[in-house]
Amino acid sequence: MDHSAQDERRPFEVTNRMVFAIAAPMTLAYLTTPILGLVDTGVIGQFGDAVLIGGLAVGAIIFDIVFTTFNFLRAGTTAFVAQAVGRGDETAQQAVFWRAVLLAAVLGVAILIVSPIIREAAIFVMDPGDAVAEATSTYVTIRMLGAPFSLINYALLGLLLGQGRAMAGLLLQTLLNGINIAGSIWFGLVLGWAIEGVALGTVLGEAIAAVLGFWWILRGFDKRLAPSWAVILERTAFLRLISVNRDIMIRSFALLAGFALFTRAGAQFGAVTLAANAILMNFFMIAGYYLDGFATAAEQIVGRSVGARHPPAFWRAVKLTCLWGFALAGFTTVMVLIFGPAVIDILTTAEDVRAVARTYLAWAAITAVVGVLAFQMDGVFIGATWSVDMRNMMLLSLAIFIGLLLLVLPVWGNHGLWFALNVFLGIRGLSLLAILPRRAGRVFG
Image (cartoon, rainbow, N blue to C red; front, side, top):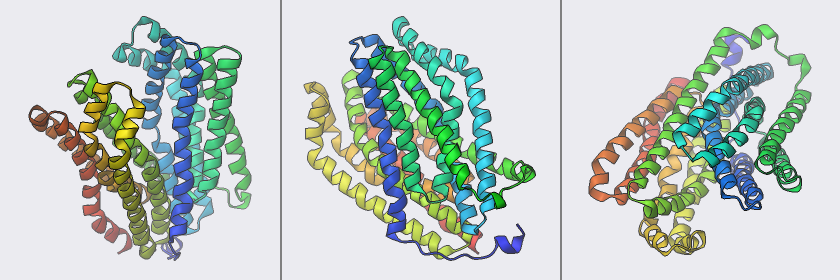
């Protein structure tokens, strides 16, 4: 496509309905993941063997770390496809899709090849004991067979979200997790294969979703506008996709490091405080599901507005996603403050843990509001492919978080830990918001 075509402005209107058409289905899609985790735990729990439950828990942590790291394939694909949608360039959309699928397949096979090293290193670091380690090893070995399919599913979801087809994305995730749940129950419980069956059910879900999703998306492409392999493999475009994905991956690593440090620091205050913090983090995770939904809406609409070179749509997307994020986060904070003590009592019967959790409840309640900009600005900067800024501000926030831990933990204890976490969330959002006008000015002139 020539520069004159690329520079053509393609106005469109951003509405509340457009925002919710993406945010609502994706919130539901994200909610299917913890449901899957509950089912898997329930299946293994029927065998009454603590070793198997421990093996599943440790194995799930390993996969959370590995596949959260590679979630950049979804985000990067969404951004580039959305920008191509904004330009009205279907050939570019197809080219981005093929690059993402190829990258996902190569990375998936690479993970599969090095999976024994990942498995043994993770078990060594976590040191769960010999019996649990054996169960973990069995679970991880089988689940790793689905690695290429898992990453390809990221690319498929990225295309659908980039095109604004959030309901289709929800259907894909529902298919994946639905087959996963059915497979885990059938293989794990009905056939009695326990942890091997649960792992196999997960691989089956990933594989079927990848194959059917790939076939379905391919059918929807206009073959007349299909890119040549020379265009798909064009060096500059491929390197840009890899560069943006690399920055998002570093950002994800830093985010995981921040939450890992939070958990590690909390462990220093003893088992009761550690347990109380884990319970309180559930309140932040609940808010995270719908904030992720609005961040995804920001990715698509901002990406489309950048591709369309239409600043009113850009600023309207920023405003609406932030507005709804703050409104729902504020509601969540109020609900947590009112009903939090009752929820804590449901989540644990240990009176000492209940008492400690209530002491720090207010800190957990405000994480939703403090974290809104962190989620929304990530969505905006991903959609605009300003990944370097997002990466740098995340690293800055992590450095400030680590500094605060060293300063306030000895003085304020667990109150200082929660304070540092809220600062970490706040700095992430505010730092990106501060540079947003300048970055937008460069793009829109």
